Length: 516
Image (cartoon, rainbow, N blue to C red; front, side, top):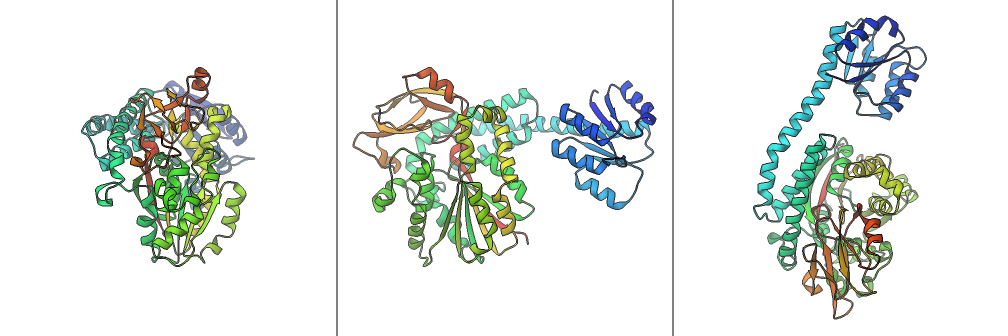
């Protein structure tokens, strides 16, 4: 057994026999005499375990522990102390220490502690790997069994749960999981191509929930349950990101999560307008032409009439009050809402749209620094978690948890990591999005995209008689033949949305009730 251990104790010289004993057992020990040196080493090197003396001159053990956990929350730390005071023990446990030992300690006691902690981590990883390999066959069988829309939700949630559980595991196992996700998305794309347009004319009991159903089915029933109801839409949030956010909220709320399918294209001007209007894009254009803008440009300008669409939907649902609406594009706007959250309780219903995750997606496409910080899905998820932990949105959730509220949290679409390019042919007026396009007589490989020749079949408007749409499947993105290699390299391995993948279409919608 080999592991690298940091041991901080101001009497480290007296512990040399313990250190020699452990080194003879195959461990690598780094001894230091104070907390400052321990922190410096943690900043420079990776350790499997840390032993930390609670009573050291200068920076004491608890202060050192706090700083180590800020640097690396996952590293196991064993606190060693002469004191048996309950307060010290509670403080150490509050920092989530791995164990707590009382001096004097003997070498065998230390050895057993190391084996228990490190073997527990190894055995947990091995058990997770074993469980996934057992699940692999059943998930593959589900994928191959021509699943319906509800079974696709089950497949996606299982795969997402395994992604989170195995994200720091064996690379070979992660590759197997990634291959299975790709296999699932291949079949999912075929399923959407075959079934999606038929959902649009069916009753709700014959199809999944779709974007226009969200307010009627999830907001409307809760309006009389509490003093105020809130709809919070986190733009471009994937299910895996919501699972991370949900953990941070679970101390404050009981949370019930369901799922719905975003309409196509999975892009803000379509899917979010559909949520607020309670209508498909074609019907918005028909009934509220003044609010429908079928054009390219800044997405925020294409959704500037969401408050009006929301008010019209509330009128159709029989409500005689004007719903309150706020869009948060910048930190200052979030702080303003957070500071005045009590004022929003005066309205029976409030809708908030938070754009940060969507901004992060678009910024990563253009920033080499962000690509370096978040090179893959787990790292991107971790970056989203860091934002949420320090966001005004989390503070808003905390403030609302003390009040008589119901909160519905969802998103308008997700995103997918685009790794494969496919050529598209269209004229100069074709839209510029990478996962969906509309234009005149668009042509693309049918294996890589859903081709919609008659937009009305998909409840989509058209600018002229020859308009058609294309939606990328799996992890494809569209590239024109002109300057092909330039744009192929520029957009490969960026997060995009607009197409038909599980990550973009299968979305969480959660109802939060305060635990107060």
